[in-house]
Amino acid sequence: MKSIVILISGRGSNMEAIVNAAIPGARIAAVISNRADAKGLEFAAAHGIRTAVVDHKAFASREAFDAALAETIDAHGADLVVLAGFMRVLTDGFVRRYEGRLLNIHPSLLPSFPGLHTHRRAIEAGVRAHGATVHFVTPELDCGPVVIQAVVPVLPGDDEARLSARVLGQEHRIYPQAVRWFVEGRLTITAQGQVIVHDEAVDEAGWTIPALDRALGDGACDSRRS
Image: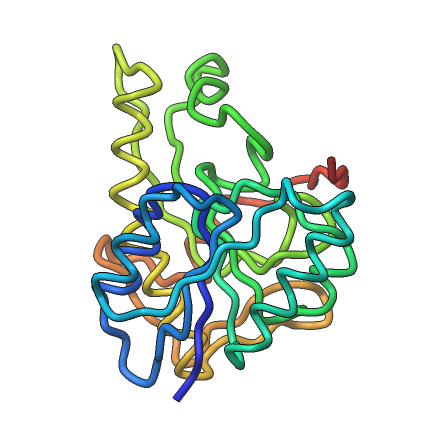
């Protein structure tokens, strides 16, 4: 049984999707937020999941906050830490502490549009395809090894809200899948920083996951963390 700790800052809709997936072999040990008013804490408590708040405003530095956060995570024996709308930039030390067992979901097809305002930037850039990426977290912002991606079309007349809703629906599909693969021990990060999914799976559209990654192509990562 793998213990999973999920970090949120707000509603935590991806957290809800993971909880509702009821992944065999996984136990949601805790949901932790940096905000006491995060709505997702209510959902977690209602499902019998332990909750905790580590308020970033109570600490003088990012390092002090991350140390307290790590202490809380480790108290729950986390095998995997899942970022689900956790709106804090984590220090390099924190990221390295959980190397290979820290997942994030980003609302774009990385390496395109790292950082914020991804849907607006996709529309402004005139791209025809957009989507979401689940990746392992590294010290380089939004640049960790890709586990799975989902593609949605950018339609004529799309605004941020419509495009965001379309992407979010796919996030709720692929994040539980990535967590399931981790729990099943099917993910390996190669020395070249690529993820191998053992016993290659086929998604609903007929793509094998590594083939989809190849089709999306390579790109340069943004090495900044702020």
